[in-house]
Length: 288
Image (cartoon, rainbow, N blue to C red; front, side, top):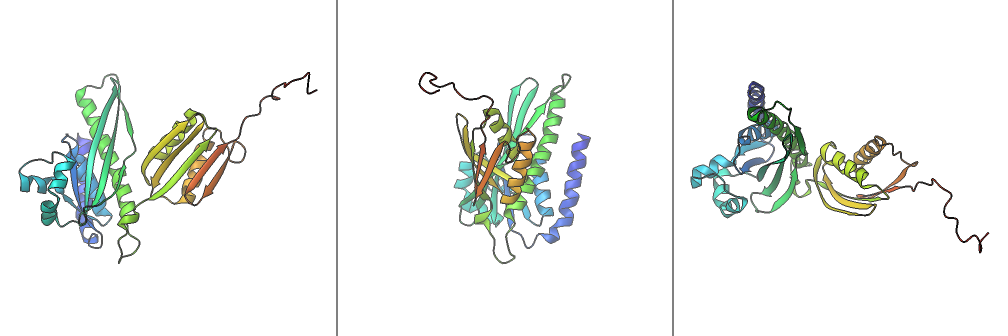
C-alpha cells in the first residue's frame, strides 16, 4: 500500500505543475461506472497524466452525486442527465471509464480499462478504446490482501497506459482547429496461409505491445485466412516496421517466409507455402 501512496503523491505533484499548461487544450469530465475499490486510483492517475499533457480534467462522478444525490448507476442514466451535467461541468469532452476484471482460475485473472469518448456539446460519441489486457499471475502464498494490492498496482499502470493513448489521440493538429472527429486511424488487416497460433500471437502483440493501440474489432478467421480492423494513433510506416519485427520473433522473415503488401490503409500478409515434398505421384500409367 505504501507503493500506491507514493504513486498517488507523484501524480498529484504532476497535477499541480501542469495546470498552467492546460489552457490551450479541451477540458475533460471523467465518469467511472460501476463502483470498485480501484476507481480512485484510476481517476487520479488518468487525471494527472492528462493534466501533465495540457488537458483540464474534472471529476464527473462527484458532480453527478452533488446534483442527483447518488452515484453514477449506468451509462443510460448518464445520458438521460446529459444536459444537466453539462451545464454544471461546461466540459468539451465526456469520457466514460469502465474497470473490467475477470477471474480466469485460482491463480490467474485478467483486467483492462475500457473507455468511450463523447462530444459534450453535440452528445455524439466520438470513439471508444481500451487499455491492453493485463494478465495477473498470483503467487501460491498470495492471500486476499496480496491480490488486492496487485490488482491496485496493475490498475494504476493500466490507467497510465490509457492516459497516454487518450492524450495522443486527442491532440489536435493546430491551435485553432480541434480534430476530435479524426482521433484515430483505421487499418484493415488480412492474413493468408497463417496458422491460428500465429494469428493469436500477432493480434496479442498488436493489442498489448504496439504503441498507440486503440481498438481491434471485426475479427474473422476461416481456416488459414484471417482478417480484422485495427484502430491506432500510430502511423502506417511504423505499423509496418513493428509487424516485420514481430513476425521475425517467430522466425518468419519478410520475402523469405511471407510477403507484405500495403495499399493505403490496407495490410495484406501472405505466408508462402512450404514445399517439403515433390508433390503427388499423379496417374503414372497415363502420365509418365
